[in-house]
Amino acid sequence: MTQAETIEIDLAGKLIVVPRNVVSELAAASAARARISERHRDLSLRLGRALESGHAELGQGEVRALCAVLEESHLDGFGPAAAELRRAVA
Image (tube, rainbow, N blue to C red):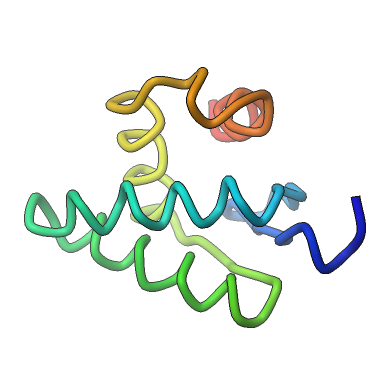
């Protein structure tokens, strides 16, 4: 995968490279849950910016929201990159 096809996500100190399409799907899933909590809204905004810049830094609140999105969604839908994200935040 080329750099243009991936996004670097710093998960509170752990750098993970994630396919752009997975970040886009996670941003959409967190946006759909933005009414649930500020963390989901913040995660959606940060991932949206990451799609523009190629990099995101997530704090503990956003990491917790990411875990919730991954748990609430079908992991298979996000593919192996989601499983790697899940392991990274565990």
